Image 1 (tube, helix red, strand yellow):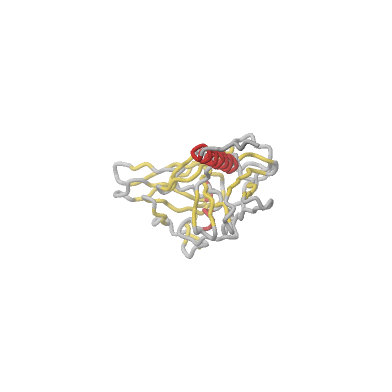
Image 2 (cartoon, rainbow, N blue to C red; image 1 turned 90 degrees about the vertical axis):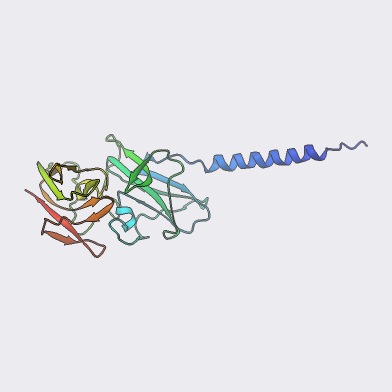
Length: 249
């Protein structure tokens, strides 16, 4: 009986080839789809078999409780590995709009961008993953876990009368600032969506269209959150400070 001898170099190449195939296979396996609409909301996925806990934090839930200097709350929007395959998932009933987000691993040990989503945005000079929820969603959007702060107005439900919108001008005297934004309940506390414009007098101004009601807000001055120094009306925020209160009539 003749034996077929395989040269060592060829054997090494075969082993490396198998290893390469395995690596490619693992890479393909970890390449999850980006967030997508499913029944009930937007499905987020994150592949992390070694994680003990994963939550979803973003502009839609006050960044897991940390927005404005608060503490990270692991009970806000936890993700679950239901199939035991290391893929953590959550379905979020987000209303139409632009949202930045990250995955928070093991009680805020790491904050990771979504490797399956190439779209990014910046908030306070920090790069995050970005998702745009279109107007033509099939599910009914609701207030997402963690977004309701004390005194916050609830979103209108389908069939409810839409409140009248009023133009409101806000001002901040900050002549040495380089950029100023206003963030509040009217824009889901987005720190970079409503900029103020600086006038020749050093006063920053913005005109907003708001429905009648009360809104909590803060100014974001060069990345720092602050109350409105010219507004005596305020309410306590969940982080030991105060939010300014705007009444639109």
